[in-house]
Length: 323
Image (tube, rainbow, N blue to C red; front, top):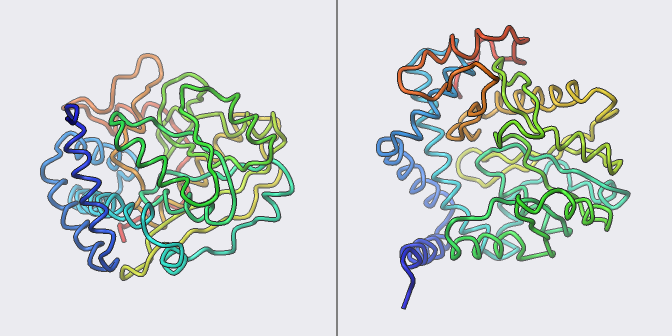
């Protein structure tokens, strides 16, 4: 007998497995259709996404932000179905669909401790697979509420070279041990986990609780930091995984400057493919003392958060139009 909740999750995984046999153009269109439905049904997540977009892109009209949020839901739903390809397709198919630009910097990775900094774009799992096709690594992941899905996720992310996945509540010590053993740390740096080990630094001009862990871990281990981004190729051709140049003089001696530098980099990448950033996450959930939640119904989010702090303008934001 299946315990309560496991049956539906198994059905979902079977559906994902069946769909992964489809050509990517067909699977992508199915995912986008699902995303249109979810945009209509998931009012709470739609509210979060629209609030984030109002805060980050006040120069856009309401209609433009709604269109961008709708495309985000389409991209996110598509990425969820495409995980079936990442988890069960052959290595040959994955190598055809994943375009790595430039090649994975294996020489730099093997030369010493390395942090692969991967912002939360919907295709971030593609970047993880691109790394695991060529080398081992380690990462922190959020344990899923469903044991069935949690097991599938862990297997999917470690199906090629061995990958050490540590639960977030395990702390930083397992990561440090793995890095000192020669494993690159695949790090997702841009979610709001509260005020602990975070600084309020501008993200698109809004103060956001930003993790200081990338800078602190780099300082403790002497690691080089190499940013990596994963985005969708046009016309359902697959995905682009880009390894950016390693950052010089990082983290330096100024923790605030290092954290601001990270946010600036993420802003610049978001402006390239704005619909693919993870807008449905409550990025501004944690507020400085005295500031109200920006996600409450009826909150004037533009004046409650953006105008509360005269932060430097975000890189390239003026004139942005969804594309």
